[in-house]
Image (cartoon, rainbow, N blue to C red; front, side, top):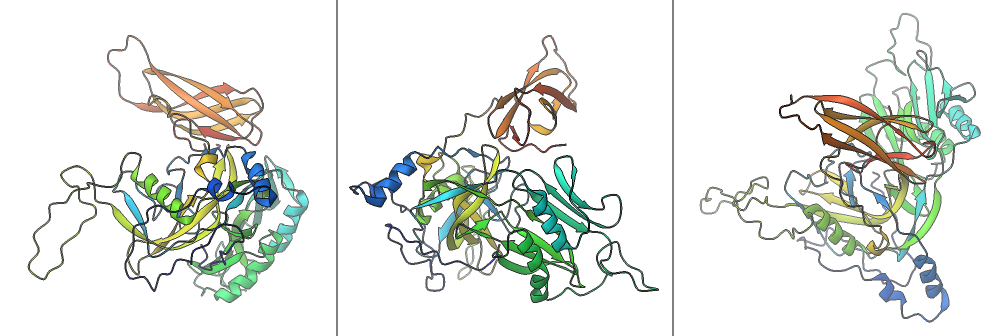
Length: 478
C-alpha cells in the first residue's frame, strides 16, 4: 500500500480530534471507549440537512458482509496484495491473541460514507483502449466469459478481461517487445536476462499510459517493489475522495522500460447506499474484540515459566509460551497511523468497497509495517451472520457451472452419503454439502476421496458468486 497519506479532514458536525502523532508519544496507550454514537449526534436537530440525511440513512438496507474463509469479517491485513491464509498483522486463530495499541490519539473521521459496488459488464471499447495502451494489436474477441486480445496459443502478448464487473484484467508479454540482436540469446520474457531494474521514475512513466487507459490515472503510485530485474508499479486509486485498500492495479516494467505484465480492474465502481460511520477509537475496539474472540477479554492470561534473571538483566519474554491456564500471552502491535478509506469486502457475494479504517501497525520498533483494516460502518447497519452450519457439513473446494446445473467438488469418506443443496439470492448461490454416515457400517476404512454432486438451480448461475456454507468463503470455479 502506498505510504502517501491523504488529508483526512472531512466537513461535518462531528468534532475531529488531532491526528495520531507518533514521534511525540513515548509510550503506547491501550485504547478504551471512543467513537461516539451517530444517532446521539443528530437526534437534537429539528429539521434541516442533518434530519434529512438521517432519514436517508434509516432507509439504507442492512449491509450483508460475507465472511472470508480464512479471516474474521472485520479484519483483513496484508501488504499491497493480500495473500490467502493468514497475513502479516492478522491474528492467527491457532496462535496467541493480538492486542492493537495506539501510539497516540486517533481521528474521528467522517460521520458517514457510501459503499461502492462492482456492477454491470465491461464494454469492448474499454478493452480495446487498454490493449492499445499495452501495445497489443488486434480487436477484442470473446472467449467464454472474458474479452481476449492477443496471442494465447504461443509466445506473444495476451490481455484477458472478465466481462462481468469489476472487469478483472491480466496482461503478460512472453516475447521480447523488440527483436533480439543477431547472435544474442533472448529469454522467454520481455527483455534479456540479467538486466538492471529501471528507476522508480522511469517505471512510473511507463505505467502512466496503462493506468490512464484503466481509469487509474489519479491513483497514488508506489514503485518500490522489485521482482528480479522487473520493477512493479502499484497504483492505489482514490474513490469518492477516499483512499482504497485491496483495489490495487499492478504494472510490471522490464529493465528495457517496456511493460511486461500487469493486473487490475477495468470496470468503474458504482456508488451505493450511505451508512453512518464509527470513529477510529471504536473501530480499534472492534478489531481487538475480533482478534480476542467472543467471551475472551484478554485478561487473566497468566505467566509463563521462565528462568529467574540475574540482577540487572532484563526479564525474558516469550509471547509464544503457554502459561499454566492454557492461554497464550497476547502479542502487541502498535497502531502508528489511522486513515479513513474504503476496503475490499464481499457483500451478498459481490466485490464491494466498504467504508473502513486503515490502520498502519508495527509489532516492534523498526520492524515491518503492515496494514490492518476494520469495517467502519455502524454495527447497527450490519446484518448479523447466519448461525454456523452443522459440523458434519463438508467444505466445497470448487465448482463447475452450465446454465442451471452446478457441479460441486469436495472431499469425503467412502462410508457416508452426501447431499448438496443451494440457497439462492440475487448476488450469490450458497452451497451446502451434508454428510450422513451409512447405516449398518460398523467398521469403515478411513480414506478420503474427491467427490462431486450436482445441484439444479432455480435460475442460471450467471455472474452470481458461489459461496461455501461451511466456511463462508467464495468457491473457485474450475
